[in-house]
Image (cartoon, rainbow, N blue to C red):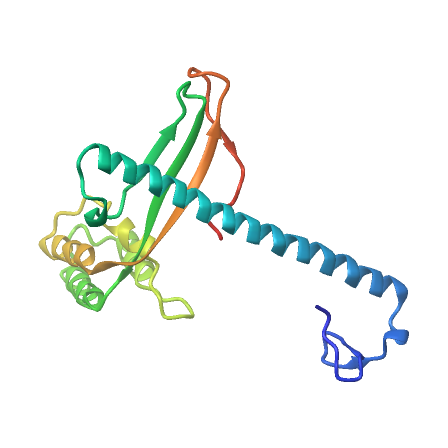
Length: 206
């Protein structure tokens, strides 16, 4: 993985070509160590990805069997929702979850206008704290995105001013599902009365 030019010279972090004989032994050993570990990590990630695919395929096959047993056309089924699959003794569990990523569409600008109107009216609800929360909620990051969590946090405040209520409704209407990510978690326990223990595999990231 170390970069080399056409002559076999190693390229350092500054983009300079260095003859291998000029590189210290400890630097060469470190490079070999890092690349060996990285290769193993990449291989492990590949295995986890294959495992995730196999898990989903097996769960899908089981779910299709359930549909058939209950006389539901598997070809016309909608996307299955969250599931908890347990063994007979309730000592092993496979948990499947789907998480939607929400992003506001163009209507979020209208919501901001409504909130500006709310602030201009200077109602009793328009405290400095609320003003700050609104400003923070509509800040954009370097990619021009608004933090959806901060927008949703605005809806948790018990403010009854008409303009505020209208703005919250528009925010809710503006949030669209941008992507859906599924993850699988695995749990075991000694008996049905014990607490579940997670088998730590970061399968959602692959």
